[in-house]
Length: 354
Image 1 (cartoon, helix red, strand yellow):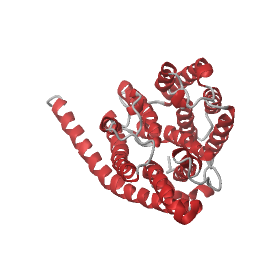
Image 2 (cartoon, rainbow, N blue to C red; image 1 turned 120 degrees about the vertical axis):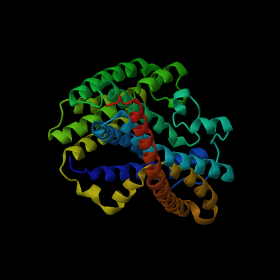
Image 3 (spheres, rainbow, N blue to C red; image 1 turned 90 degrees about the vertical axis):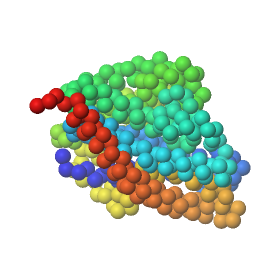
């Protein structure tokens, strides 16, 4: 399938909107006595759900192209961890120097955060955006297990079967959890309910399913019959587990994503600024919040809130680009080559003599 460049544009939209949400209203949840922003881009937080749709599309494509399960593991580990570890170091340093509130810096918490999956064990995230990575990792583990079970033959039929089962489980859990979860901050949901929601990804699994079905639809040239029901369950589960206003936003995001996935080209998403944002989106996403919180709080008395936000945006983009160049290009390439060599050596050791 030809390269789908619009995905970079969508990543740029997702990263940009999440950044705006953190640099406006979310900042004041950290510093309630700082001046209010000119506007509150609270809706930008839904960029995370757009990222999940994109992941469903891209990671299925990666898995189906993997010749060995180890190839998939090497691809994901080398893609995710270098930039993540660099962002963790930056986050700890900035939070310590600037004394950013609500950033847990206890050594055991920081060490647990090195794994990226601290959410699985209800350990606090050092940076607020890290919770999404543990969700992504659960999706990757599912596809890795499918690669193992099928010997790297993940067919469309199998994907549809797995997506159907996941959608049924997700909807059932959302209905069950509705009385305890609807309209409540996820951090304040009762622990037993939270564990079930986390284990099944009831709130986010349908988004990954919709993304996978969008990939199958685009490759085959026609919208799969299950794509719209998957998006509908993503919307319904959001309403059950969060609010119906949130569900309306998810409906719009899913509809736009499916439309873009089925169009041959969407020129708006190909404009250079969005393409550039998309290329650095992962590193930008990982580092922007802590940098923004510190800079806005430090500079607003001198530049006003709007001026401080502008400086924070410029700084976040610069750091995101630098981490992208260092971690995603150099360190990731080195780590992937190393993991590939280790995998090749192990294969040679276990290969039967000719």
